[in-house]
Length: 474
Image (cartoon, rainbow, N blue to C red):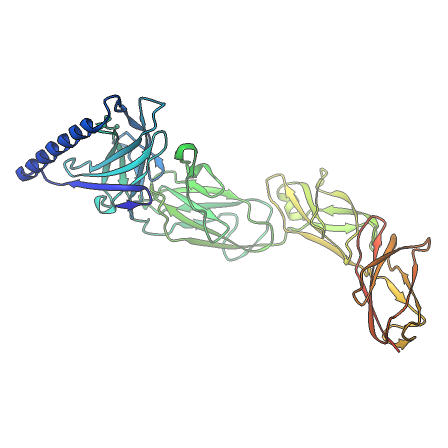
């Protein structure tokens, strides 16, 4: 049959009756005859490559265990992917190789199932899938691999041992916290201590957790030559914790996502094959721990540089001193500021948001706590004023081919030029004078309704908000 892993053939042996032995003898004779015919047909100068026993053996993308007392636990509900790298003794030869995989229950080595992968490439992993119906849940199996080149087969590899675990843990873990009780408001400032408990379920060997409801997927990277790179998920302490014993518990310390209000941690138990239990949700509430943000000038103007004083939440400072702040402005830029011994800091910011400015500040404590954001904001009108004696705004005047003068003036300081367009015509730009105003003459080509779009540009190159000046030509 053809599978995603190549072309496979499968044989299975369950009994060793006399008839079965006779059939095997007939097949052996036919096999020998076939090899002889193939040898006779081959050119006399063609030497059969010498196959080498496959290396780099993996099952379910996990490392092969050659210790029968410590098998690898795997899920095999749809079959078990096994693989190894075939090769031949002649490194310059690149023949098409066949890899045989044979599996049997450790309790009954007579019940063998063989899967053959043809068209394999020397030096690259050759995966095949052992059938699910040959792998009973809860049983331990051995499997091995062999390279076939032409009519020659290598030695079998040393057996790899796997235990099939298709059953997830029976119950969700118990989750508790001594410093952040559930369903109540808590003072923030210190990491949350959680105890994750399997409640004696011996199938459980660890836990997976996340502040997101969708927990991370346990996967394996594939490296050069198709070689899997399995990792111990428990090495990633952001999401995984190993139980202190099968059916035992684990204690973790986590800083919740920045912010205040309800927080939820999702947790599930994992068995040795990393099957997950149902999730447990632990919800608690955190009061705001935001710092205060105070400008030295309470009413700064557009373009002003202002010094802000940043002060920590007293409860946060009492738990662990604030060591720094992250200051973010409306344009997305972020500045990190170091705090003094008392947790306060000062930051100089130029306020140049075209609609106004908003400053968001979070504090960072020595113990890793990140507060929710304190903020300060101000609004500005950066549109220019537009005036004309001949063509008043929202009124009528002049006429076709009657010129009119339009005067532009700023509402904020630092304006260097004005850009304008009448009724969608190509834009034109005029420099501002010493008093930061400018005037342009414009003659309407016909009677009707018109609108001028005008915006100013600051000396620092910031394009400010546009103003729409509409009027009627008589």
